Image 1 (tube, rainbow, N blue to C red):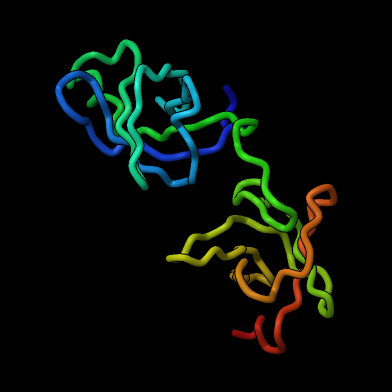
Image 2 (image 1 turned 45 degrees about the vertical axis):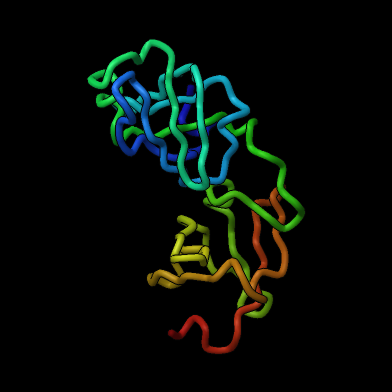
Length: 169
């Protein structure tokens, strides 16, 4: 599976018990209890692993994968990222987006015009920020708040209205 067709849902934090279970820490809100398999990143390749059973709690889950039957085998997965196919993501409401789907979208200010393309979406505590280069410096635009006026996924464009002096900071 290609990584571009998947999204990261978490990572293997540690082993759990002696029979091959692992503890997964979620980095993206997902319902792993409804899926039969996940992809685990091993040596830059996504490898499918089938879920034998799972128990979820708030921001983590305890998972037993098929054919991982020992503490040693489970320990080999520690630190590995967990991915799901993007087709399994729930549909979002209008105006909402997943962080990875807006990378390379252009950002235009209603008054200043084109500002640049989104390089990444940064999580800063409870806030999400759009990171882009504007005239050689990094600009972080909050996703929450009154700044975003429209999102056009077809045109890959986000229109913002920034307050006077925002880009001078």
